[in-house]
Image 1 (cartoon, rainbow, N blue to C red):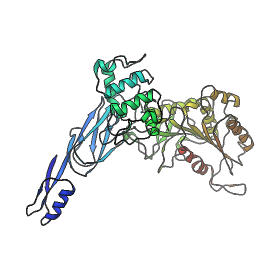
Image 2: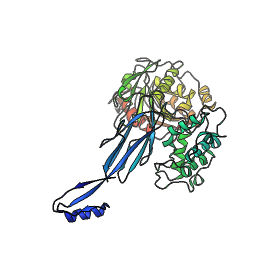
Image 3: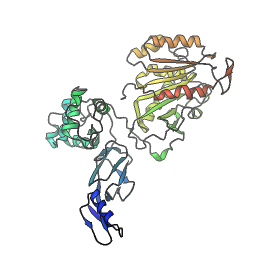
Image 4: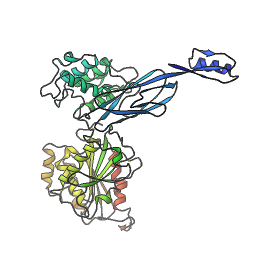
Length: 486
């Protein structure tokens, strides 16, 4: 702690009052009315196997080289962590929690820990021994022993599961150090054995609701209900969505469409303002397939309204100006999605597929055979089975063989002669009868209309306008597919 002197000639009484209010013990009552102002030390410590930089919005911290500084009481601080290439910032401990920017107000000597992991965390974060499962008597035990301060052989004795890929105490200790901030389950800025450690091991033993959190939520926690604690812990028992080859923020611009080649196809990507450039926050993905004669380069703007857009958009390429091949092109779609997940942090439970006309045919063919990859689909002027190259029985059987019944919003134009409404109703009703949560939207319009075209005796908004106003809002309906956490 440091003190500096602020003078205000003739303000002796005011100086006394200020000194009392802010708790300053030393007031110089000389003629100049000197008031002692307290500076507190802020220290940033970097932890983990990775590397990166931490900078403050004001003052000297650039850690890097300068990892501490003195700040006046009441100063609002923002710390930003940027991982080096090949590293992941896994979060803060201290006055902040989680991997976003760290914002707090100086009120005393403050210590902040910023953790960087290299390589980035893959698999399930709470799979401590790396055997692709999360178990109370192995992973849970390793977590709570670590939080109690055990190390070396005492940390791992009898707690390594079958098939583990991390088996030595050095490997286990290093991994636990890398995920240290993730162990702060209740979000009070500290990872503690008798709060967070007990929550982890109780959760892995199957406790939920009141029994999960009874007596173990720390003072100052930001997650205090059973629901919040369960959601946070569940995320850490699922595979990490952090990209294995994260794209540099300098390689693209937000709100500007850019081409990305996955080795099979060049697709077009749009990244919204809300995306976390450090890739720490899982984001929804909307995958769009153009109709016959359309292009990925053109359609990217139709499915990317910008502004408060909450999703990354990708329009899959490979058939510019053509119709899709429903037999071979599902591989293009799945390759494009898989590759994008290696470059951006895509929430695996919040990938939504969509398409118009021939693109709708391909979307249905793809999602019926890969339903566990998608939360749902948004379709315009197509039909679930007719032109997909797969019969109704085959498509439904593909889901029943191990997939899940995905969400659907199907938009049909009543004057569409390419996909007549009678046939569309028959096929969408068959999906509803099979248990799919499918919502039908039927409006006036032909197969393709420009804005203002006359259908059924009146102007219609147009095919693209209907996509934007009717279908795109459903991306924010809260759908969660397999592998996702609400």
